[in-house]
Length: 216
Image (cartoon, rainbow, N blue to C red; front, side):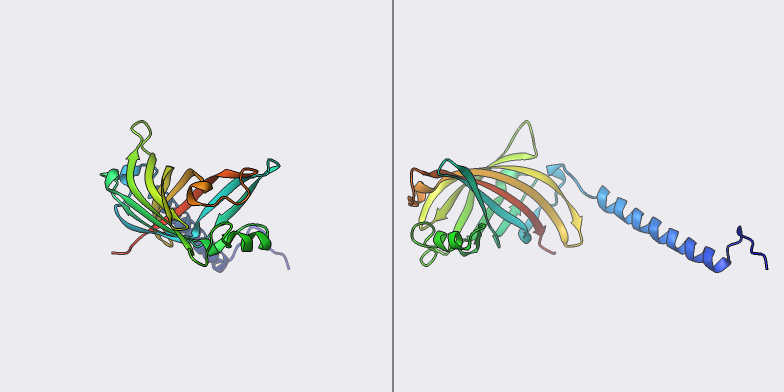
């Protein structure tokens, strides 16, 4: 029996056609989703946002005795953003940082950071940041300076954070807006003097956050 190698059954053609249609629909959906994203701050939807805890963290770094820069993170941060793209100065940001959820590469250091030498989490389990003023850069509208107050170990000090808007748009997890931020604080301003001056006083903070808009 001879087989015609150029022959393909209708059922096979049907399956190929269906698969092609599905791929084209998926590709089309991806294009639609991608086109709905924006990097223009004024196009972001206004409203109340909450930080997605799985996509938000604060990375800290400090000089370690002049030998290296030691890096760790605060995770499970909770934050709320009231966003008004038409009037950015009316926007507000509040964040609660659980100091018991500090993460370094040393269990011993994690425990030490929670003692009275550092965060004293038995008496002050969280740090709180509240914005007081938000100023958008006139020359680069996706950058802003966020002035605020940080309360740590019961001490409140002013903090300035430089923030960059990444993008916003619909995702499977809801409408999101993403930002990165940088700030520098002195731990001695909050009564954390252990190891000074050999252990660095300045602590650099890098903030990453994907904020999800509240439904409704």
